[in-house]
Length: 257
Image 1 (cartoon, rainbow, N blue to C red):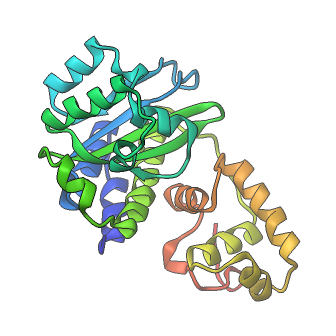
Image 2 (cartoon, rainbow, N blue to C red):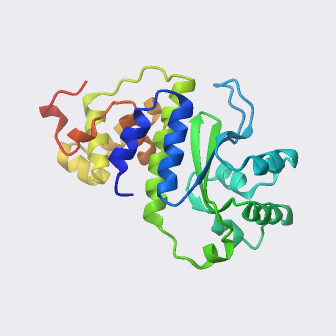
């Protein structure tokens, strides 16, 4: 993705949850993934909503109806992987799994025939104990092609970043976050991390110890309810806690609210 800044601005300017999803789905379509589904993999007490596949989606209606009628959420290997792993993945990885259940393989074959194929799975923590799953897929049956094509891991990484941003935007619209306040030091660490600096490099830049950097990261993760660096950085940008324009600039020399 060459237009991440523009994509973020597009999602950020949405005025409703529906508009945010529509813009996110449109962006992913430009990147070759014409279908998207946002599902609650677990019950969400914070939203007052039960576990469900397709809280919002542009998957084919006939497929969604068929999926729900057959209660496929209980055998969906994409949902299973999302529930147990925070690492984004290609659906074709599951198709290669020799231990995949027959019912799960049948689901994936039927999905491919329905135009829900060659996808990406992304797992997101919504709140403690609550998991959201996002599925992105192409629209043409091409599973055989997907088995042999080269994986684009840069696209996977960018899709994850953008999905986190959309997720935080959408979630905040339907259930606003509580006010989060970061210290200047925490903002400095986040900004240098966005610049791809390691913790060792950040420690040297800020003239603090490595253990102090880790201490601040733990505070950042707790405040942002984030389970990793990328998630924390993306959420901080989404909430306006750090400004990408200032990245690479020592915050002690600028005014950051």
